[in-house]
Length: 335
Image 1 (cartoon, rainbow, N blue to C red):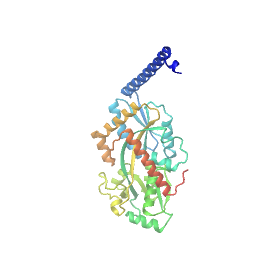
Image 2: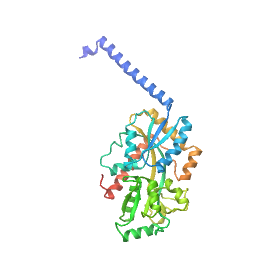
Image 3: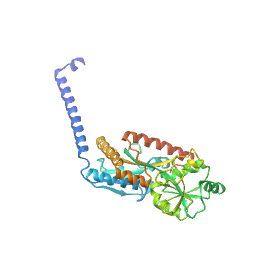
Image 4: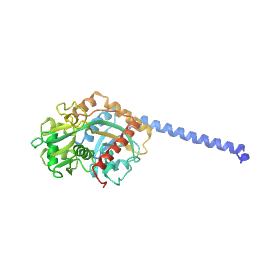
């Protein structure tokens, strides 16, 4: 064995192989860097697996406009709602991993694994975590003409009629569904879930009094709130939100441990070069620091919370664990 290893011919061949491998890796690195530097050189599509007017849709459109100006390329939003966000998400999973098809989704991305037994993709492997687009509280809304004037009124009514009062959500397995289940757990009440196609539909029926309440993303309901079309009983953040300073937090109403928030993020198909992921992340973070995006976010009650891809990946996994616990405590059987 030692004689073979000491063979000049073999040593020369091994050296040549090592050089070729090293050259290949170097060329690949140069190619990836060049691709990132020229990215994007054509239209970028952001698929939102929710209806137009949903929280993720609103945040996505605000950031997409800023990215279009930075990149000098069109960044379009394409809504593909259905099946709790699985249809649109699946479209991104199956897209070419070149950075030109991205997913913009809400916290439902982290909630879905707690609801669906068999997802058509692996939430930990099929997509790459790119960046968080921001965070906002939910606001518990009810009909402006309805009987509930406060959280206390709603809880008393629910306890007197267990299993009779309904609540709306933006779909089975959506973050609004599990946020409401969290509320029910914290208040010790049992309500009937009525899922809708998306937030606009859930708000509309709650406004009409067809459901008792909806745990609405603040950015989707702010227009109806300011127009007096719905009554807000409280926001789910620890403190009040600057966009709606007159609405108390549920925590300050005597439920000090109550807190749950909504967030929006961006993902790319697995296999997108890390240099491109890094560029998208950096440019999104720069966009969120721009005066235009800040103003648009503040008007909708969204707070920019920039993260690196690694920080966002850790955050998403923590959120998945949180929603798993909520679903388990609510005795929700995965479908």
